[in-house]
Structures are given as structure tokens and as C-alpha cells.
Amino acid sequence: MDSKQRVIFIVPCYNEANRLKIDSFLHFFQNYPLISFCFVDDGSKDDTASLLKHLSEQNAGQVRYLQLVKNQGKAEAVRQGILSVSNEFAYIGYLDADLATPLSEIPNFIKIIEQFPDLVLVAGSRISRMGAQIKRYWFRHYFGRIFATIVSQMLKLPFYDTQCGAKLLKANVASQVFKEAFISPWLFDVEVIFRILKTHTDAAQSIYELPLHQWEEQGESKIKLKDLLKVPIELLKIWKKYQW
Image (cartoon, rainbow, N blue to C red; front, side, top):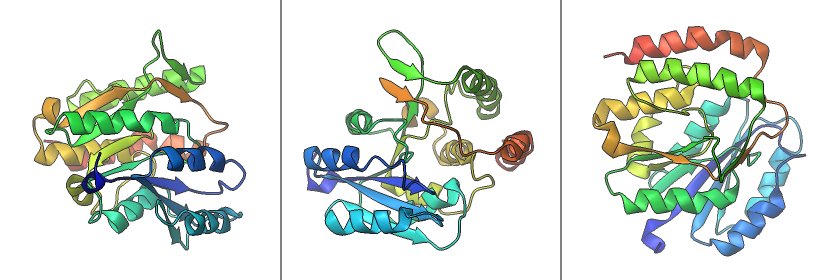
């Protein structure tokens, strides 16, 4: 990967001061100097902002820091991060701050999207299988399978896992897909796919689900019960907006 093919990953952060794996990021920076990160502090109430500011100052070549004054949710944090860098990189991805998808998976995303020029999106997929280490709480797994079945019917695609927090897009596509705000702060991945399908009707050529080698549930989810209760309503709103 040459300098013209630089990649950046957006990492949304909300109250991550005690669980952000700084050592993992520093080790990755040393081994992959052409891969950058933009950490977006989504109005954290702990020391996340000062931690990220220090990290960006000490690693100015690879780390950027964007601070949102008020908490706006994961979707908007990722959106603001992508829009802030969309004109500078060939590929833009996003990754959860807890590194449930470890940084070691990133080169696999880049390899796929560079190998197949028609692809505009590579999406991580948490497929439990022999040879992989996918560790999920059983109740989240089964809820996820029900959710995925419904979403697949909405998208008219055999999408296995829309909600994995690791994705990589071509920058020109990302700037268009993330131009407008999303309906849901947590289900925005579904909208991302819908928006891609509006301009790339051949999903088989433009979207690739990449089975992860490793993924591990990290602590409690930040999605509250009231957010889960909104899932059917928000899915319906998304379907109404993008149905064709």
C-alpha cells in the first residue's frame, strides 16, 4: 500500500478513558505507519477527551482527534469523523473503541477492498465457525440472528451481520453515504447499506462481508433497554424511507 492509498479508521468514543487499549493502538501504529485513526470524543464526561488529545499530540502523523461538545450518539460521531477526513484518504473505515474487533483484522479489510476494485464496502461479519474465535453472549447472539433475518428481508440481501462495528468504505462513497444524518444512532449500519444500494444496485459486486478471525464481546453494551425497545420502530422508519 503506497502513500496514495492511505487508510483511516474512525473510532467513536464515549466515556472510554478506563477501557481504551492505548498500548494496542501504539503497537499498531509502529507496524502500520500508513494507516491512520481519527478518534471522535462524543461528549464524554470522563477523561476521554484529555486522553485522546494527548494521544493525538504524541502521534500526530497517524492520529487525529475530533471533539463533539455534546453527546450525539455513535451514528453522528462516526458521521462527523468521516466528513472531517473524506477528502484526504482513499479508504475510510470505522471501528469500535473497545476493540471487540481487534486491530489485527484491519489488514484483512484493506487487502480485500484493494484486491477487488468494484467493491465499495467491506463489512466485518461475526460468523462463529471452526478456526475462528468469535465470543458473544448467547442472548445477544440469538437476538442478533432474529434482527439479521428481519434486516435481510428488508434489504433483499442475504446479509449475515449488518451490526458488526468494523467496516471499510471507499472514501468517495463514504462522503456521500454519510452526508446526511441518520434516523437511528444505533441502527445506522442498516441505513449505510440502504444508501449504498441506491447508487450501487449490483450488491454482489459492491459489498463484501468479511468473516472475522477474532471478535470478543467487551463488557456491557452501551445500548440501554429503552433503545432496544425502539428497535422495531426505528427499523420500520428506515424501511419506509428506503423501500423500493
